[in-house]
Length: 86
Image (cartoon, rainbow, N blue to C red):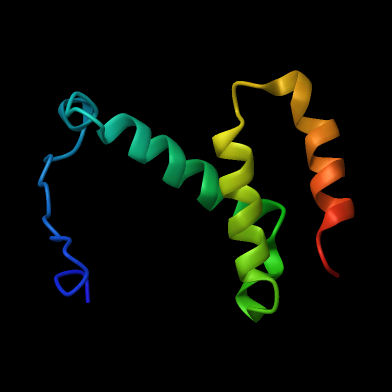
């Protein structure tokens, strides 16, 4: 499906250890995946039921995209929650 959409899937073998984190872009990928795993296993432990998986992932994306605007985070989250459908 990726090829049909004009994207190519390539793998990158970094080996592991400290050398893996020196690969350009690999550090941020690891940070994002680590944060997502922590959120799912900690707060959202019921994600296995699948009822709210899309909402959990949308929240993680929302927080990640606004991680450097901490003062605005809570008011914007409250506004977004009031505007969304139940």
